[in-house]
Length: 324
Picture 1 (cartoon, rainbow, N blue to C red):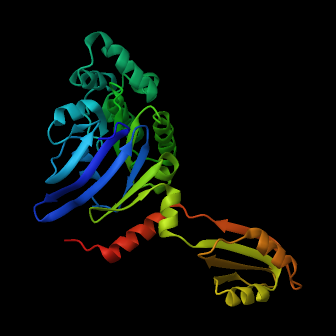
Picture 2 (picture 1 turned 135 degrees about the vertical axis):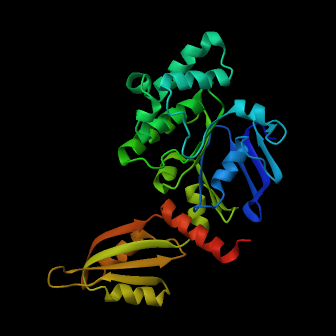
Picture 3 (picture 1 turned 180 degrees about the horizontal axis):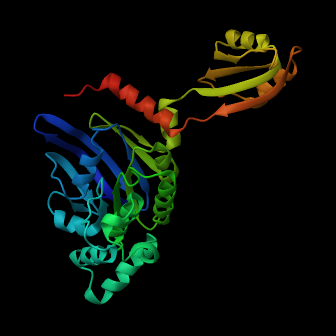
């Protein structure tokens, strides 16, 4: 295993009875990366993460964490990683500080360093000042998620795995968890699954998209945009007629869609053009300035977001992959 690789997964498969949860999943994650796993419900995200966390055994394939085989030494793996499971099960009757102290003991933090380590993770997750004495059942969902992340950070593991860390949170709570995840950047390798695409887009260096238990796409946002949404799109707004623009598109065999035409209340027209060729803004500005019946009001270049990439990738996989 390459020394720069924190997690290496090769042809990992798992079935529950006759249902195939994941099928030949393969990927590598480099040290210091924050990588997001995306997929529809039941795609196999949590199964993959639980195998990496040493909680679930794979049926076939291999997974290594920091060069250690997960199948052969799951106990060592649990010491190497911090793992917050989906829905973050916590003992409701314990106080926050009691629970984190117990978890630190189970992770074999030396007795003389235990209090310092618990204080460190509570400070990182903004729990010491606000919630250390509170009973867990009285906490909001957002603070329970913070407790789960604090648990994952105990011992400062090289690798942090967070399964749906923002599930069920309101926008303010999500913002807090986002800021917390950002503090982990470069100091830890982080693997996150989430249904909130904007959070993955904001936090992650790379994305792995899983559908029907298979990896259907993997790369940076820019790489995936080139693969799944190769066409360039641009909306042009002019004051007046767009007849000459339409004629240009038809002559050049460029796809277009008229979005607005002049009306008594709005004299502007809008046209969206789409081409596999690079659209040269300067060329269009000069061309429109030469037109007699319209005046350029604005040009907007459409950059694909992660949602459109995700939809394109999963749609393609629906067409090529059939559930067994």
